[in-house]
Length: 433
Image (cartoon, rainbow, N blue to C red; front, side):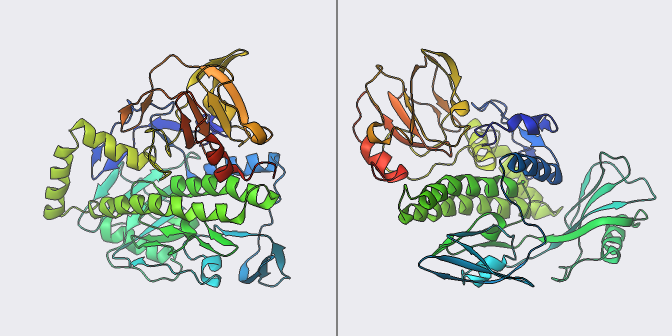
């Protein structure tokens, strides 16, 4: 997704490619996946946020920091956002991306069903006076570890608490106790930059939309951080919603297009939450759990099983239900190197401006966007290589594909434009709008 927007190199320049897809203690090597980046990029979340913030500053996106939502009201014309200690803001739509305790979700009256926490962990950045042990430790309580940060002074700590912690903000004393319970020392922790508590609670919003209010990221789903799904799920939500919302706000597509956001993202996140729940269970040194993890590890030596779980963890297997048809339909378009009359093109490069693409791989002129030409890019090109998708493998070559701005295929053709107009109208608004 970052590559589709032309900013992947910013992250690659600072991160380190690693194989970090796991189930239990079994590493799932995805290096043979048919994608340009078949790995996890090791990069701390604060750096991811910094890089994204720099990008949106270049785009001229206004950001107002230090404001808290105290409530909201909506009518047929828009949403009024009430701010704590300030006046209201008026908007056509409001997206709550304000975390698991989302004030927007609560104010909109959207339910958050799921499973309560069974254990909690503390995560912090602190200074220490004793040298901590290398690597992670897994015991009957959970998973623990200390890691020296890039500055050579700060240590990142993750430690599971012996008892489920309260909902209150954790203190340095809480961290000291949790470390001592596990390591018989707190390593002299002091000078915390921040301390936070997370749990294995798993919940998902009953609806991702209530009128003109929508939810994304942790506001829509919370889960154990096992497996590192959070950032990927949140960005997938945002990329799915962003282009739809833009078209509705601009008046080129009807408000009903926003209903497809819940229809597509709710099932995709539900599958990921099942994985995080299962992964969380394995992170204890318990004989029964060890037996389960060992059994599953044996099954994951089967190539198809490895690829299926690797596809789920990476998000590369996501398929939105757009009906029957070619295996590409609803799946992410592969980043092919195609050749047009003006030279070679990477498919993802065509998506940098977040505009849909009609890629014609058949006879030039056999398909075109017609009245949607101002909204949809057309490229007549050829591709002579094999078509292979993550998890499902080789597929037949389509004659043409309509690619949505989020990189998912909305229509495939077999040499004729049959069904193309319906797909264009469904996703990019009525002709002439």
